[in-house]
Image (cartoon, rainbow, N blue to C red; front, top):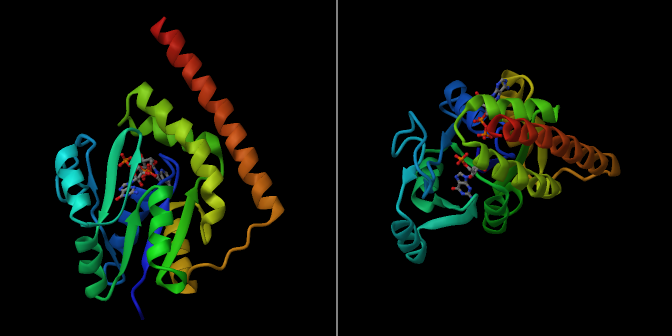
Length: 223
Ligand code: ADP
Ligand code: 5GP
Protein backbone atom coordinates (compact mmCIF):
# COMPACT_ATOMS: atom_id res chain seq x y z
CA UNK A 1 0.00 0.00 0.00
CA UNK A 2 1.51 3.31 -1.05
CA UNK A 3 0.34 6.00 1.36
CA UNK A 4 -1.77 8.75 -0.20
CA UNK A 5 -2.89 12.23 0.61
CA UNK A 6 -6.62 12.13 1.38
CA UNK A 7 -8.13 15.61 1.18
CA UNK A 8 -11.43 16.32 2.94
CA UNK A 9 -13.11 19.58 1.94
CA UNK A 10 -16.59 20.89 2.68
CA UNK A 11 -18.37 24.14 3.37
CA UNK A 12 -18.14 25.07 7.04
CA UNK A 13 -20.30 22.69 9.10
CA UNK A 14 -20.12 19.95 6.44
CA UNK A 15 -18.38 17.59 8.85
CA UNK A 16 -14.79 17.28 7.64
CA UNK A 17 -13.23 17.68 11.10
CA UNK A 18 -15.63 15.14 12.62
CA UNK A 19 -15.09 12.62 9.83
CA UNK A 20 -11.30 13.01 9.91
CA UNK A 21 -11.29 12.38 13.65
CA UNK A 22 -13.63 9.39 13.42
CA UNK A 23 -11.58 7.85 10.58
CA UNK A 24 -8.41 8.10 12.65
CA UNK A 25 -10.08 6.76 15.78
CA UNK A 26 -11.49 3.81 13.89
CA UNK A 27 -8.49 3.08 11.70
CA UNK A 28 -5.42 4.36 13.57
CA UNK A 29 -3.06 2.10 11.58
CA UNK A 30 -4.46 3.28 8.31
CA UNK A 31 -4.92 7.04 8.68
CA UNK A 32 -2.93 9.81 10.30
CA UNK A 33 -3.83 13.48 10.46
CA UNK A 34 -1.81 16.48 9.39
CA UNK A 35 -2.18 19.28 11.94
CA UNK A 36 -2.39 22.56 10.04
CA UNK A 37 -1.09 25.98 10.97
CA UNK A 38 -3.48 28.92 11.21
CA UNK A 39 -3.64 32.55 12.25
CA UNK A 40 -7.21 32.26 13.55
CA UNK A 41 -7.71 32.27 17.30
CA UNK A 42 -8.33 28.96 19.11
CA UNK A 43 -11.92 27.91 19.80
CA UNK A 44 -12.82 26.80 23.31
CA UNK A 45 -11.14 23.44 23.92
CA UNK A 46 -8.73 23.65 20.97
CA UNK A 47 -5.15 22.89 22.01
CA UNK A 48 -2.10 24.22 20.19
CA UNK A 49 -0.43 21.37 18.29
CA UNK A 50 -3.62 19.25 18.36
CA UNK A 51 -6.38 21.15 16.56
CA UNK A 52 -3.90 23.49 14.85
CA UNK A 53 -0.56 25.15 15.35
CA UNK A 54 -1.76 28.63 16.21
CA UNK A 55 0.62 31.21 14.75
CA UNK A 56 0.74 34.98 14.54
CA UNK A 57 0.35 36.38 11.03
CA UNK A 58 3.97 37.34 11.04
CA UNK A 59 5.16 33.86 12.08
CA UNK A 60 2.89 32.27 9.47
CA UNK A 61 4.22 34.48 6.71
CA UNK A 62 7.82 33.79 7.73
CA UNK A 63 7.21 30.04 7.54
CA UNK A 64 5.52 30.48 4.16
CA UNK A 65 8.58 32.37 2.89
CA UNK A 66 10.82 29.59 4.16
CA UNK A 67 8.84 27.11 2.06
CA UNK A 68 7.49 25.16 5.04
CA UNK A 69 4.01 24.75 3.57
CA UNK A 70 2.80 22.17 1.10
CA UNK A 71 -0.10 24.55 0.42
CA UNK A 72 -1.63 27.56 2.06
CA UNK A 73 -4.66 29.79 1.54
CA UNK A 74 -6.72 32.55 3.08
CA UNK A 75 -10.17 31.73 4.44
CA UNK A 76 -12.54 34.17 6.15
CA UNK A 77 -9.70 36.65 6.61
CA UNK A 78 -7.31 34.16 8.26
CA UNK A 79 -4.37 32.17 6.91
CA UNK A 80 -4.34 28.37 6.94
CA UNK A 81 -1.58 26.05 5.72
CA UNK A 82 -0.48 22.42 5.57
CA UNK A 83 3.02 21.91 6.92
CA UNK A 84 5.23 19.68 4.78
CA UNK A 85 6.74 18.25 7.99
CA UNK A 86 3.32 17.03 9.19
CA UNK A 87 2.53 15.31 5.91
CA UNK A 88 5.94 13.66 5.70
CA UNK A 89 5.65 12.40 9.28
CA UNK A 90 2.43 10.51 8.50
CA UNK A 91 3.48 9.24 5.06
CA UNK A 92 6.74 7.91 6.49
CA UNK A 93 4.78 5.99 9.10
CA UNK A 94 3.17 4.15 6.17
CA UNK A 95 -0.30 5.65 6.71
CA UNK A 96 -2.51 7.77 4.49
CA UNK A 97 -2.58 11.37 5.57
CA UNK A 98 -5.91 13.12 6.07
CA UNK A 99 -6.00 16.84 5.29
CA UNK A 100 -8.99 18.88 6.45
CA UNK A 101 -8.55 21.86 4.13
CA UNK A 102 -10.52 24.32 2.03
CA UNK A 103 -10.91 24.18 -1.75
CA UNK A 104 -7.98 26.37 -2.83
CA UNK A 105 -5.63 24.24 -0.75
CA UNK A 106 -7.12 21.09 -2.29
CA UNK A 107 -6.31 22.44 -5.74
CA UNK A 108 -2.69 23.08 -4.72
CA UNK A 109 -2.37 19.57 -3.28
CA UNK A 110 -3.65 18.00 -6.49
CA UNK A 111 -1.04 19.95 -8.49
CA UNK A 112 1.74 18.57 -6.28
CA UNK A 113 0.33 15.06 -5.77
CA UNK A 114 -1.37 14.18 -9.05
CA UNK A 115 -3.42 11.11 -10.01
CA UNK A 116 -3.13 8.19 -7.62
CA UNK A 117 -0.98 10.07 -5.09
CA UNK A 118 -3.97 11.98 -3.75
CA UNK A 119 -7.74 11.60 -3.42
CA UNK A 120 -9.87 14.73 -3.22
CA UNK A 121 -13.15 14.23 -1.34
CA UNK A 122 -15.95 16.79 -1.10
CA UNK A 123 -18.32 16.31 1.83
CA UNK A 124 -21.92 17.50 2.25
CA UNK A 125 -24.95 16.46 4.29
CA UNK A 126 -27.73 15.63 1.80
CA UNK A 127 -29.95 18.41 3.06
CA UNK A 128 -28.64 22.01 3.13
CA UNK A 129 -30.86 22.69 6.16
CA UNK A 130 -28.86 20.07 8.06
CA UNK A 131 -25.60 21.76 7.08
CA UNK A 132 -26.90 25.04 8.44
CA UNK A 133 -28.29 23.47 11.62
CA UNK A 134 -24.99 21.74 12.35
CA UNK A 135 -23.03 24.92 11.75
CA UNK A 136 -25.31 26.91 14.06
CA UNK A 137 -25.44 24.21 16.73
CA UNK A 138 -21.65 24.03 16.86
CA UNK A 139 -21.84 27.54 18.39
CA UNK A 140 -18.21 28.30 17.60
CA UNK A 141 -18.71 31.37 15.40
CA UNK A 142 -20.35 34.74 15.85
CA UNK A 143 -23.32 35.60 13.57
CA UNK A 144 -20.97 37.72 11.41
CA UNK A 145 -18.56 34.81 11.06
CA UNK A 146 -21.41 32.42 10.22
CA UNK A 147 -22.50 34.79 7.46
CA UNK A 148 -18.96 35.01 6.10
CA UNK A 149 -18.71 31.20 6.05
CA UNK A 150 -22.07 30.74 4.34
CA UNK A 151 -21.19 33.33 1.73
CA UNK A 152 -18.01 31.39 1.07
CA UNK A 153 -20.03 28.12 0.84
CA UNK A 154 -21.60 29.28 -2.44
CA UNK A 155 -18.15 29.54 -4.00
CA UNK A 156 -17.03 26.24 -2.47
CA UNK A 157 -20.04 24.40 -3.92
CA UNK A 158 -19.03 25.60 -7.37
CA UNK A 159 -15.58 24.04 -6.86
CA UNK A 160 -17.01 20.61 -6.00
CA UNK A 161 -16.70 19.43 -9.60
CA UNK A 162 -12.90 19.49 -9.27
CA UNK A 163 -13.07 16.74 -6.61
CA UNK A 164 -12.69 12.99 -7.22
CA UNK A 165 -15.46 11.90 -4.90
CA UNK A 166 -18.51 13.39 -3.22
CA UNK A 167 -19.50 11.92 0.11
CA UNK A 168 -22.80 12.53 1.87
CA UNK A 169 -22.38 13.12 5.56
CA UNK A 170 -25.77 12.02 6.87
CA UNK A 171 -24.70 9.05 8.95
CA UNK A 172 -21.19 9.45 10.40
CA UNK A 173 -20.29 5.73 10.30
CA UNK A 174 -21.31 5.51 6.66
CA UNK A 175 -19.34 8.65 5.79
CA UNK A 176 -16.19 7.17 7.38
CA UNK A 177 -16.64 3.94 5.42
CA UNK A 178 -17.09 6.01 2.26
CA UNK A 179 -13.78 7.75 2.92
CA UNK A 180 -12.09 4.35 3.27
CA UNK A 181 -13.65 3.23 -0.02
CA UNK A 182 -12.60 6.44 -1.79
CA UNK A 183 -9.03 5.96 -0.58
CA UNK A 184 -9.03 2.35 -1.84
CA UNK A 185 -10.42 3.30 -5.22
CA UNK A 186 -8.01 6.22 -5.60
CA UNK A 187 -8.30 9.65 -7.16
CA UNK A 188 -9.41 11.15 -10.46
CA UNK A 189 -12.27 8.76 -11.24
CA UNK A 190 -15.44 10.80 -10.91
CA UNK A 191 -17.03 12.27 -14.01
CA UNK A 192 -19.33 15.20 -13.49
CA UNK A 193 -22.75 14.45 -14.94
CA UNK A 194 -25.35 17.08 -15.84
CA UNK A 195 -27.55 15.86 -12.95
CA UNK A 196 -24.63 16.45 -10.55
CA UNK A 197 -24.42 20.05 -11.67
CA UNK A 198 -28.16 20.49 -11.24
CA UNK A 199 -28.00 18.92 -7.79
CA UNK A 200 -25.23 21.29 -6.74
CA UNK A 201 -27.03 24.32 -8.12
CA UNK A 202 -30.20 23.34 -6.31
CA UNK A 203 -28.23 22.75 -3.09
CA UNK A 204 -26.63 26.21 -3.36
CA UNK A 205 -30.00 27.91 -3.91
CA UNK A 206 -31.65 26.11 -0.98
CA UNK A 207 -28.70 26.94 1.27
CA UNK A 208 -28.98 30.58 0.29
CA UNK A 209 -32.70 30.67 1.14
CA UNK A 210 -32.10 29.01 4.51
CA UNK A 211 -29.14 31.29 5.25
CA UNK A 212 -31.25 34.37 4.48
CA UNK A 213 -33.90 33.14 6.90
CA UNK A 214 -31.22 32.83 9.61
CA UNK A 215 -29.85 36.33 8.92
CA UNK A 216 -33.37 37.78 9.07
CA UNK A 217 -33.98 36.11 12.42
CA UNK A 218 -30.66 37.32 13.79
CA UNK A 219 -31.42 40.82 12.55
CA UNK A 220 -34.85 40.82 14.21
CA UNK A 221 -33.33 39.61 17.49
CA UNK A 222 -30.85 42.51 17.37
CA UNK A 223 -33.44 45.10 16.41
P1 ADP B 1 -16.49 21.19 9.48
O1 ADP B 1 -15.17 20.72 10.05
O2 ADP B 1 -16.69 20.72 8.09
O3 ADP B 1 -16.71 22.67 9.61
P2 ADP B 1 -17.58 19.78 11.76
O4 ADP B 1 -16.88 18.48 11.67
O5 ADP B 1 -17.14 20.75 12.80
O6 ADP B 1 -17.64 20.50 10.32
O7 ADP B 1 -19.14 19.45 11.92
C1 ADP B 1 -20.09 20.48 12.17
C2 ADP B 1 -21.02 20.05 13.30
O8 ADP B 1 -21.82 18.96 12.84
C3 ADP B 1 -20.26 19.57 14.53
O9 ADP B 1 -20.92 20.06 15.69
C4 ADP B 1 -20.36 18.04 14.45
O10 ADP B 1 -20.38 17.45 15.71
C5 ADP B 1 -21.67 17.82 13.68
N1 ADP B 1 -21.66 16.65 12.80
C6 ADP B 1 -20.74 16.35 11.85
N2 ADP B 1 -21.07 15.20 11.21
C7 ADP B 1 -22.22 14.77 11.76
C8 ADP B 1 -23.07 13.64 11.52
N3 ADP B 1 -22.82 12.73 10.58
N4 ADP B 1 -24.18 13.52 12.26
C9 ADP B 1 -24.48 14.45 13.22
N5 ADP B 1 -23.72 15.54 13.49
C10 ADP B 1 -22.60 15.70 12.78
P1 5GP C 1 -11.91 26.33 10.75
O1 5GP C 1 -11.63 27.75 11.10
O2 5GP C 1 -13.39 26.03 10.71
O3 5GP C 1 -11.14 25.34 11.59
O4 5GP C 1 -11.40 26.11 9.26
C1 5GP C 1 -11.79 27.01 8.25
C2 5GP C 1 -11.45 26.41 6.90
O5 5GP C 1 -10.03 26.31 6.77
C3 5GP C 1 -12.00 24.99 6.70
O6 5GP C 1 -12.49 24.91 5.37
C4 5GP C 1 -10.77 24.13 6.87
O7 5GP C 1 -10.87 22.92 6.14
C5 5GP C 1 -9.73 25.03 6.26
N1 5GP C 1 -8.36 24.65 6.63
C6 5GP C 1 -7.90 24.14 7.79
N2 5GP C 1 -6.59 23.88 7.71
C7 5GP C 1 -6.21 24.23 6.47
C8 5GP C 1 -4.96 24.18 5.77
O8 5GP C 1 -3.93 23.75 6.26
N3 5GP C 1 -4.95 24.64 4.49
C9 5GP C 1 -6.07 25.12 3.88
N4 5GP C 1 -5.95 25.53 2.61
N5 5GP C 1 -7.25 25.17 4.50
C10 5GP C 1 -7.32 24.74 5.78
